[in-house]
Image (cartoon, rainbow, N blue to C red; front, side, top):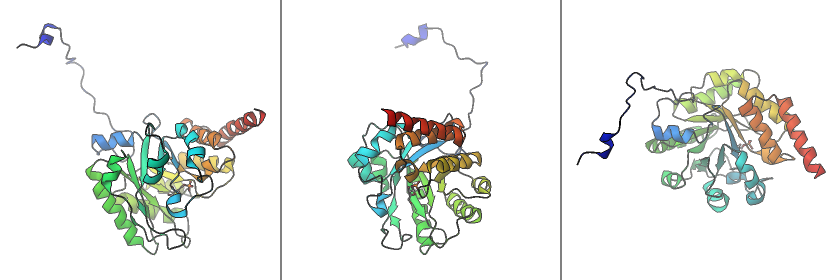
Length: 295
Ligand code: 5RP
């Protein structure tokens, strides 16, 4: 039977060549469609940046301040996050499955704060990451730490498993207490993660020379917030990191321990996605606090 469609006039636009578009994210052009699609649920394709909300702290330190009741304190922040970084336990028990953005699952663990933290192992099966529709899995890498090799191998095993299914791997550079947090160390740690297959890398913002950390890492870098600091300082850190080549933040305590977490995550978004200066973003933050206090 001839196709009914044959009666219609067709237009093949022979004069217009199909475009080959480069993928927007640094170092990610050679991935398959599935991986690129998942990465587009972590990084905003319009800005190339991400505001990841990190709430996975409980995997080694229990009910962290601000995360005692994730259902009460964190759910109101979800709509301002590009991605959530968390454990599968919290994902299944508390996060609504209607959350539309990327999920980055904590995939390493083992020791609590009472033990040697670098003694981690892979703590989830890739099948469960697929079942939970993860965009990426996250693993600590302790360069220079007591269990350095074990944590590097945790990452490479996860890369092998995750790559099979087009799932990203976030290499998290974990800095032991005895390490110096400077650009030289961060260059070393980030580059090792990228060389061994991390899809993107999380590290700490350091001064001076953070731009050498981002420049020498062939995949995107996001910065951790680190210890709680005053809100303006956290915005300034995010701003400086973005100006020096970071593709976003993976921020926890500096958002959920802020005086007004909803206003803080919005202010961080302004810095990351809209190039607001820290002063402009902080002004917005203070206005929100004033409004809240009046109502
Ligand atoms: C733990 C992590 C956390 O996700 C990360 O440290 C949280 O972010 P913040 O430092 O901003 O609270 O990777 O090792």
